[in-house]
Every structure is written in structure tokens, then in C-alpha cells.
Image (tube, rainbow, N blue to C red; front, top):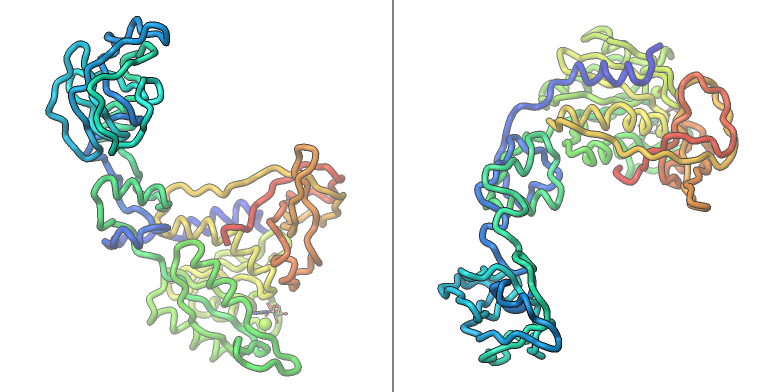
Length: 412
Ligand code: AMP
Ligand code: MG
């Protein structure tokens, strides 16, 4: 039986990241994976500009300014945002300037309007012929200097990053309206079991609705991949084979199935993989979800998750979430992990265990309380939970207050 860490590594090793690149409009680029570094084609800011509404000045003029002995400056003009000033400031002069407007030549600081004799901040107010300044100014005060954020040529976004909203802003700043990203991986999904009926069908004795294709499809989308539903196979070799065959025609990058991977008489998924592909390994030292099968079907990488809805969900979180980011071309993906404290003592069986919990903050600490019934078929525990805590392999019991790792489930 493999450890969780070893199984994760071996799964990533059989998945080659997608290499094909597509160009998409900026408005669709959030969550997509950038295919090349972006080097800035501008300094940012691209011109020195005012950080406040006020007056652009020569700081040296204000060395002796105080409330009692203000310095009077002659106002020679006005610079609204969007204008390129032509004037050159000389000793004793200032210009009215709006936030974001370019600093005129000669000026080296901005005095905010509230530190002058001018009462109105209104840009429509008539331009005063002179102002009094009450405080000294240092060179650079309230100036956003050209290039202070970054310089032309700087790598502002890296290949292999999954684009967030702020990254979209950076692309806009660079004038990139069409973005080169890796194509989305296609993940073929199949469910198996004679007991499964579709969402719309009416429940009959012995039947249950196919939950996993929907949960897993949504989880796949949450990793920026495309889920392709291959269908639900009955518990016959022929049916399982025909659903598997669709993976080839659909040209998926990975097949994910749920159920049918144990050693039961009806576990044809495993049999089909043995017949048409290869089994790399199929048992992992974890709970829930020990029967995890990893291998390939006719050259397409394959992951067989357990059938129980909680087991397949946790198998996805543990193995497939990191693997799908890798497959999608993300160069560095790290799950946000927190340390929390168990609210109560917990018994475990020595396998690496993933428990559904709710978090509660008191006395500066986060306490994790078990959420609902922890059986591997109890989907409601996942619905109730904020996240998972991990009881490491080899640990049989933990006392209340013990520190454990916590994964939030809010990304799913
Ligand atoms: P199996 O691995 O086929 O023995 O399935 C284990 C358990 O998971 C059984 O109780 C199945 O009914 C259940 N199960 C299998 N596939 C699904 C599915 N797609 N949706 C909901 N439950 C499932
Ligand atoms: Mg079954």
C-alpha cells in the first residue's frame, strides 16, 4: 500500500502538462494559465504624476514656510488629469494639479490643497492668482515617480501562473487585449454501477442518483479544466468498455472514473484497465478512499476514484486538485494550509485520515469540530463542513487541543 505523498508524486509523474497555446480575449482570461512570461513594455507609472489634488511646487521654495510665516507662490496654470503640461516652473511659482496628472517640468513636489490657503478642492473653482503654503516640502512629496512601481522590461507576470483578477488588470495595463494561454485540459468522466440513475429520473427501490459525475464535474471546473461526461456504465464488461471507448474519440487528456475499483465481483473498471491498459498502483494508505487506482487506458492516463461520494470527493481534493493544476500548465501551485486545533480528542486507525470539520475561533485559536456523520457515504458532512483536517499516517489517537493541518473547502 502506497503512502499518500508517494501516490501524489506518481500521479503527477504520468501527467504531461498541456503544451498547446490559444489566444483568447482578455475578458475570458481569468483562471486561465498564462503561456509565456509578460515583460513590461512601459515604466510604471509611465510619467511622474501627482498623488494628490493640490499644487506642484519647487520644494526648495518652501524651506521656511510655517503657519505664521506662509510662503506665497504665484499660480501660473492648471493641469487636469489627461493633459500633458507644457509650462516650466520657475522659483516662486506653482501650478494647480489634479491627482494622476503629469508633474510639470521644474516641479519636484506636490502640496496637497488642504495645506494651503485655498479652501475649495473643486476643480471647477476659478484658478487663484497666488496661494500661501504653510509647511515645508521635501523633494518627491506626493509625487508618484516614473518607474517607481516597476521599470520597462521587468517580468510582471510569469508563464504558468493562473490569472487572477489583479493579473487581468496588469495585462490591461500592458495593452494586452488578447492573451496567450494554455488550452484547458479535457477530463473524461465516467460513473459505473447498475444502481445509478440520472438526476431527472424518479427514485426507485435500490436505485440512487449519480452524484459523483456532478460533484467531480464541478470540481474539475474549479481547477480550470473542462469536464467531458463519458456516461454511466452498467456493471458489465461490455458497457464499461464502450464508455471507455468514448474517451478515445473525445480525445481527453485524462480519464477519471468513480466506483468499481475494488476487488468486488462487479468491479469491471479495474478489469477493463487491466485488459486495455495498465495499473500503476491501486491502494493508498488513506481514509476515506483506500481503493484509488492509477494507471492508463490505451495510453490515456487514468484515475479511478472510489464510489462513495465522500471518498471520491476527498480523493479528488488530495490527488486530482494538485494533478489538474500541473496538467493545466501551472508551474507552482500550493494549497493554502492552516494549522488548527482539534476541539475534541479523536481516534484514528493509523491511515492518513481526512475528516470533515467546522472551524470556530475563540481565545485567539481556531478550533476544528467534526461536521456531521463521518461515514464515507455521507455527503451531508461535506455540505456542512468548512474544510478538512488531516490526521497523519501512523497516528491512532489525538487529544483535544492537538494541532493539525487544515484545508479549506471554499475553492471547490
Ligand atoms: P463501488 O465502488 O462500486 O462498490 O461503490 C461504492 C459505493 O459508492 C456504493 O454504495 C455505490 O452505490 C456508491 N456510488 C458509486 N458510484 C456512485 C455515484 N456515481 N454517485 C453516487 N454514489 C455512487
Ligand atoms: Mg459499484
